[in-house]
Length: 453
Ligand SMILES: C[S@@+](CC[C@H](N)C(=O)[O-])C[C@H]1O[C@@H](n2cnc3c(N)ncnc32)[C@H](O)[C@@H]1O
Image (cartoon, rainbow, N blue to C red; front, side):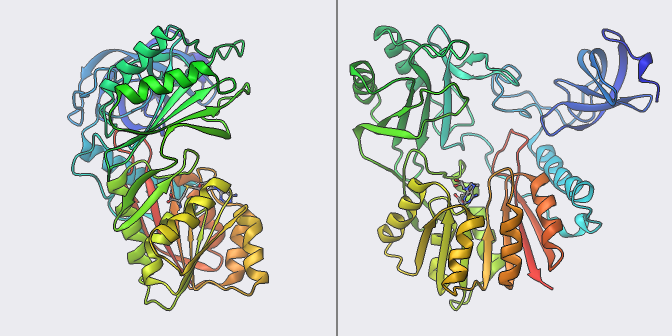
């Protein structure tokens, strides 16, 4: 293909057929791929090319010749500017269809699975796909306005609310902005490492309606942050606890590793099904309570426990899946790399009166050998790794342990496809169930059931 003929600023008519995994429309000009911002499948647009690469071009729409019937008016006024959501302009049924097609496509292309179409179920979606997130990671602009980063940038888009959050945040945002101004709190500047406040993380409990605020701070705990916390606690009635998370590094981490309780209770209490969880600032907790329950129910259905099985819950966070399953298992062993989360898991077991669960701190790829040394063998294994997927050593160790079933919970279809390929040497993939844990975004959670050949 002669890409030389395409030049920046030239205009073409493009029919949008698909979406990229970051939400741009995909179309073709004479077979040459063009990614176009703010488009959905079915749009026919005049596009101005902005970037030309060897394999593709990028462009912006300058006129819509035909508006896709799959479009909807995004209910959020910040959509397009704020980088939080990517597909609020796509009707919800079409979002779910795209997510299933995406999982199938990735399993075929990256996982070499010819059976992807047959084994992948329809995505389980939400009845109301808004107001679902239990965690907001607010950023602060130079002039003290609260918002989220713009897409692909660190520019803060100020907001007065966010309609995918359980609590859209109007009161909190106002209270944060006023306190920042009145207390003359300086905002962290990533270009020179100066300034104090790097961001505010809000965790909400669906069960109690209470919230934990984590003030991410470039410095030690001082009078200013104490005064900030005191004021936020006074103005926001549902605050259960406020932490200072110290992050003095030149990095993009949301939180630091040192977290000091400034106000209230140490942990936030929430629940999934009938299990109650006490959550620390650093512990991973799925962001969508309703769909997390659907994911855990799916794991439960796939394992179909009788009460006699030993289950390994690997990458267990604060033990949520294992504790959810414990009443149907003989014993559950969890492994997790974040120490605070392991502490939470142990305390959560006690909090729920669960005695048939034990949790280990360490990397799953290392700690699984400790269980082997202790001659503990799993009947079934649950894998729930972060986006980068499972370590190869861990996958081999799991296969060597010969569990009857493996249930793989994934937030990244690409690494799921890669890992399933390796596991397929000894396991058949029986079913792939996507769940819409993140409506309005391009993300999809997938639960896959594998059975030993
Ligand atoms: C997607 S979360 C799943 C947590 C939990 N299963 C749940 O449902 O809430 C992945 C977890 O893996 C942990 N993790 C990351 N790398 C790890 C590793 N190499 N070994 C063990 N845990 C790891 C993270 O800290 C995080 O808690």
